[in-house]
Structures are given as C-alpha cells and as structure tokens.
Length: 318
Ligand code: FES
Image (tube, rainbow, N blue to C red; front, side, top):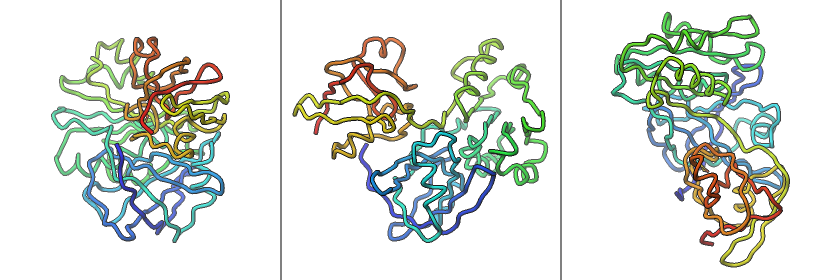
C-alpha cells in the first residue's frame, strides 16, 4: 500500500514514565483525519545518515482529529528510532507520518472485552477506551508494567476507570495471574493483548488450557526488526544488489536504495510487504506467514525477516 505522508509538528513532549515519552503531533498543512480505535501511524525520522521508520499506536481519542498523540518507549537495544525520538526530537520540530492504519481494532460484537497491556502496550487501548465508554461496552483493563521503567498513565487510568482497571507493578511484587484472568469468562468474551511476545504467548498458553478458542484472542506485538548478520538482497529483474547491514532491516535497505516496497506495520504482522523469493533461504521472523508457508520459502517479509545465507534473490517490481 502506497500512502502520501503527512507533515506534523511536535507541539508537546511529555515524560509519562521513566522510559516513555509522549508526543503530541498537530497538522501543518494537511488536516488530520479521525481514526478507528487501535490504529497506528508510521513515523519517519530523518537522522544524519539514515531515515528511521517506526510504527506507533495512536493513543488519543479516535474522534479527535485536532492532534494525534503517540508514546515512545526508549528501547534498551534501540536500533536508532526510539533513541532518535527521545534524544533528537524537540517541541517545534516537524516529522512525517503515514495516515492511520488499523491492524488491531476491537470487535464490537463481543459481549465483553478483556484488555491486557504489557508496558507501552497500553497505548492502543487508550484509543479503545473513549469508544468503549461511549458505547457503554462491558470491559476491563489489565495493565502489567515495571513501575521504575514503563509504568505510564497508571494514576489517570485508575481514576478514570475505577474498578475496571487492574494494575500489576512487578517492581512492587504485584503479579498478574493470567490463568485466573482467562478462566471462567462469560460466553462472547474477547481478549486483546498488546505487549511483548512473552506476554502474548503466555496468554495464548493459558487460553489453550482453559479451552478458549484462538478466534477470541486478539493481539498486537509492538516489535521492531532485530539485528542479524549482514547479507545482500538481489533484485531478480535488474540484477541489482543491495547490501543489508546488520543493524538495518531488508525493507530499510531497499527503501534507502530507492526501491519502494508496500508496507503497513513494519513489524511482520500485516503481510503488506511480502516479496517473492527467487533464490536463497529466508530467515523468517514474521508473525504473518503460516508454518508451511515459511517452510516453502517462497515468500519473505522484508520488514523483519532476513537471509540465512550471504544473498537472497527477490522478485519484485522496481
Ligand atoms: S510491513 Fe507488515 S508484514 Fe511487513
């Protein structure tokens, strides 16, 4: 999907947890649109020698198109994007973003919504809340975090949601019993998980034990591409070879070389960036392809996946 970027101005930067900063983005020339709960935008950050592009959930009220708000966790092993947002971006700076896209929308037919957030994974749920409340939906929010690191918005949520909000600060020894959380829910309960893969997998494991069907578990992993060994990607049609450094993704390397690849999530979940593999073996790191598709090696998701060998040949239009 190719989309026109929108220029926005950073009008407020606010530290909301020791490792999380919130950014308010207001329109410069193009008006912002309302969006659906759970939407994200991809923010482009032009560094001195590299353009970083990261997806961030919108946490503002979906009906408020006056400004968008995002929150950025300073990754412990940042490849550059989150560090750029924390250390380089100042109030008054301009950034470009994509229009909102949604891969994690609530299912309004659910009879009850159980939201489970890990750390900065609270952000998409902040855009759910106004709409859940407007619709008088039955919901509860479970928020797992480390108080001295990524515990953001806790006091506001406690005040706003009262007994619908459950906080688990692991630094204070408050653990969440996921088995109890998943078990015995009324028919029609849907579970939404946003956080690290370990949390998503733990909820899925408890749901399996409790006999909760996969179709009732929705998740969004906020992941960024992980580094790996450098390799080369060759474009079959032209024979052009693009080097992929260890700290960059194949998608980033292709974009830097002027090769446009459709993309939406940049985190291996939407399938938009799928490229046909003509030769070489992909190292799959996505959550989109099935196990058999991965075994076949015919497709690769360049936003997160890499090559097992020194070169991967892909067949895409240039
Ligand atoms: S951009 Fe979504 S899977 Fe690659």
